[in-house]
Image (cartoon, rainbow, N blue to C red; front, side, top):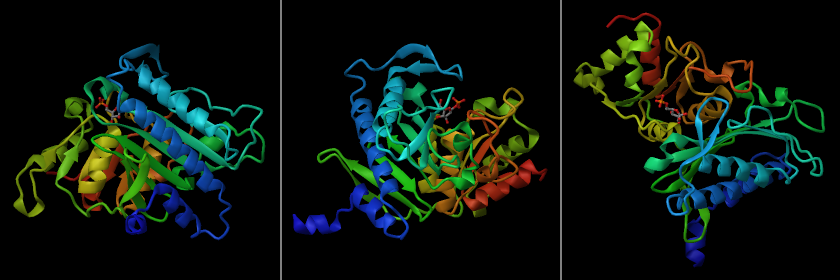
Length: 338
Ligand code: P6P
């Protein structure tokens, strides 16, 4: 048993060891991540048995984006809020499922951090048992004290102090960064602990997979269309044609891109000038993780992390992946010919 323990790094131990890298750390941030890990385990418990307890199916509500809200969405949203509202680490939260920012109950102390989260992304896939995920982003407050503000929740992605996601799939993994590299933890259901399984994840410099919903092809700009055709041409030196892999669950498509390399795209199109994905809840946290892993995330023109948010739920086109692949994609967006 002792030998096993010397090899096992739980997420709690990793967070404490990461905290020691910051002499001015107070343990406040570690407490925040600990509370979030508990919330995620509760969500995992329900997602892993959703089919059995009739949590599937629509809760009959629509969220502000017009998506049918599934019962697991509601459960995940409420679970994160209730797990995080009393620890004294946060001054405000914002959820992709809620139009307004989420104040904490008056009776609880307010802290110096801000939590943004997408409680259960990809939820339209729940009934098909496709992997889904939670995405989170942590900022330091910019308001003075007391309740946080909308300005606290609409900071540039560059200001994130941590970002992560949990993928509820064949195994449940938590991947996060605090700006010192990207680390993956796999849940051991037998002990209910997230154990370090992927130390310092780095995305390959170049991939051979592209990931996009080609059903939208006719709505895209010419540059994006030409890039897709380029990927489909044969060139053995550049491993083309690439393979197309698209799950339609962002956390799953992102996780595969992070580990295998290549490119994920959700471009703007003539129907959705800003694309479909949300800047604050999806693009920013995934962009921080990807850049920490040596990848690139752009909106077609500039770094996602440099976008100055104008509203809490604004959308952005998203191109993310290996350096080589994003560079090539950008050349086509900027007018390169086949
Ligand atoms: P489409 C799921 O609904 C989601 O928000 C992301 O998880 C996913 O990447 C995207 O939408 C899929 O959108 O238009 O391809 O079905």
